[in-house]
Image 1 (cartoon, rainbow, N blue to C red):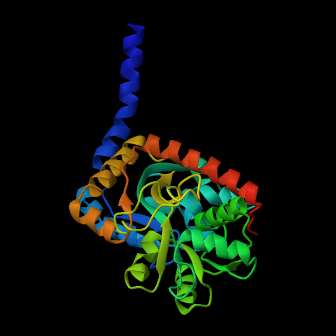
Image 2 (cartoon, rainbow, N blue to C red; image 1 turned 90 degrees about the vertical axis):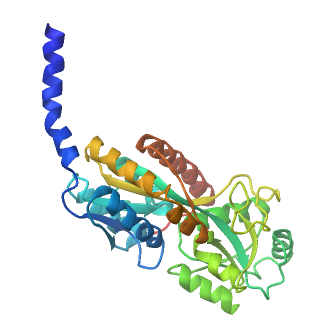
Image 3 (cartoon, one colour; image 1 turned 60 degrees about the vertical axis):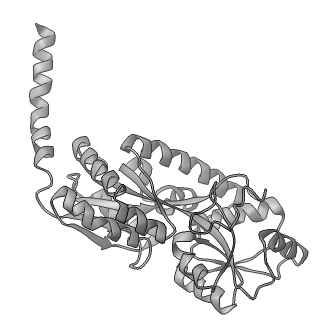
Length: 320
């Protein structure tokens, strides 16, 4: 009898939350992207219309750039945990920042609630077509033979691009200085102009320049070749890397958001990522959909955080 009363009490206590989850959402959902317009917010904007259909309310993309994603993430952290403010962030902001910034005001993996890892995109080694590198092996040999002569364009200090290329340089004994930029477009333009001949770009950002011939693609960093660049080898098959490097983008919410709301969002996101039109457009952009549960997303983020912490420490990469 005591156990029955206790069970009934627990059920009654949960009824308000269950009712709230059934009625959620009843107004627009704001999705904060902690980067400037014209970047990876493209993925969020691609998904937003279908998410709005599935959830029955508008999904509004709100760009909040600054401090390598920290400003936007803090805004989500401070928002009411009701599912009406969520984050669409990238690997650097979510899992790398904590390893490279001395005084990070939050740890997103601990201080926010994962909803889903939604999109992935490999990195791709590209060069100006006039540069004397026809293959990745030639790049290694030439830069090793002429230390300090060749430079690479760095879109953002402390990014996955930065950690991956510095790890590559360290393992192959290369003196290949970085030229830092405040964003991918500026770095790309200097590679196209021949000012800096080498770049490790994301395939999603660089595919258009590769397709037009403004970039020569030498290798991708994923485990398998990209459908968009089937003739371009992977760094793993060339024996030049020991792990894959893949940029990823994920949805998160304030920490105390009800599990029922998190699950509803996760279901809508995964359903959106199964839509042929969405999948097709992502692949055109050089990206791929990924389906995860909130629990799987958390385990994945924790693993990525550990991996890039090791790389940041090994490369002594720190950003003020």
